[in-house]
Image (cartoon, rainbow, N blue to C red; front, side, top):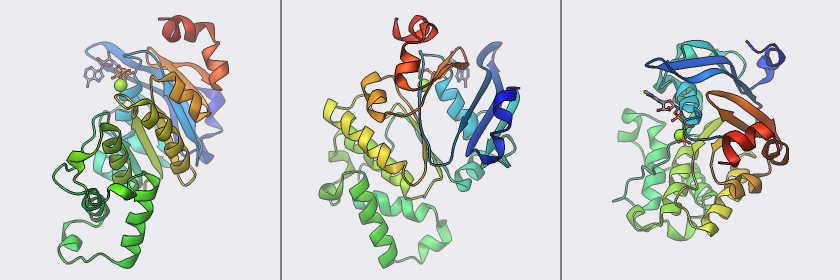
Length: 254
Ligand SMILES: Nc1ncnc2c1ncn2[C@@H]1O[C@H](COP(=O)(O)OP(=O)(O)OP(=O)(O)O)[C@@H](O)[C@H]1O
Ligand SMILES: [Mg+2]
């Protein structure tokens, strides 16, 4: 356990302490401890295989830790919940590959995402309320897709599909949004816009974003956690972390 973070547990949004998990004897996470505050935007960097995605698997209940504590809102033990319960609690996750409904319009994708929250029965008898319409319009603005609302998702660029999927997650009003490598494959302009977009989103919720693109991380201008071999190697501002000799040796200098 990490005694220096224990006192942060009650006020944290996300709290991991001493989290370890092995796959066939290989320790993907090795006593990982870190804390995300309510409303915080946190960037996670680190070499391939450092355990960044595994960390998200642990938070979302896809993988169970062998040891350690994982708490949401200071009191909810995520290791006791399954994936559906964790999503219901308000933790949304964006995987690397966009999973939008290509044969539906941008608007319909967002409407479907809004309905997903209600469950099948409610959806059967459901008509779009003015509030929902307003919410979809608001999300369209946030994810820069107002001008594309009637287009099929299939016709969006890769970056716009990523934004649409972020919009679909926003429709579920998560308190915490986990985003794994959002700018991989994006154009430079889309990458710049994604940093702005995530900063806007983090005004109303917490966001944890994993990325290898250091220009993007720098644009975010937030606290950075560098993972290596399943634990925290360094944490702090981008300048602090990127000048750490351990970070240079394990990641940046490669
Ligand atoms: N379900 C699993 N079964 C077996 N091994 C796994 C599993 N999930 C992750 N691993 C292993 O754990 C290690 C950490 O992987 P992880 O995907 O978390 O790294 P990462 O930091 O996300 O890397 P990248 O930057 O390449 O995405 C890797 O060696 C990976 O092969
Ligand atoms: Mg990964």
